Length: 269
Image (tube, rainbow, N blue to C red; front, side, top):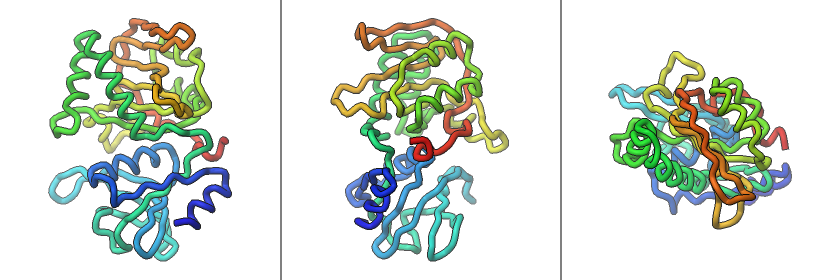
């Protein structure tokens, strides 16, 4: 493992190590997907070998259950090897994950999601009927009864703004996002409609019902949500006034930032 982290450090990408033996099994797949969504490869270290996860896809198994299939690059087996069940991998038991985070990205994906979910539920409960319905679905997450899921990605704020035109926002929302001061790296935590997200015949489905934007470079214990969009409008946090500015403008579901073409974050440091 030391060789892997040293190699990443040599590329200017400090490797964050996660011990799977100390993590809840149910958290592993979402954890990996957050970083693959971010165009960041995830190195898996087993008891005898190491390989790199480079992507994933959702598929329906023989029993009609939707599952996640990972794709890996393995120097012992070749490129684009499918991994349908990471928990019983012939390559060995997965012990550690190593993620090459860009410099100064201090906020983890898990922490970003926790902050965003709590924040959105709090604000949506005070909103319109559509907002309140979305809050209810967020509360039900983890019970198997929710129609929504979170999808997160760390990215350059410039890429986020460049991709705005592809997301077909109302002009008022576009203007507020473009004029919002942002740090170099941000986490975008999206609330997606599961059914719309899983449309196999659509490259970039309109599945995002709301999103929250967070400062990925924040290393304090009081991380603020910089902006958030929901069915009733968009709100920005005004740092100099320590207050929120809300603009009422209804918006429909949009494509995900994950589906908008962009370069991997490590190519644009």
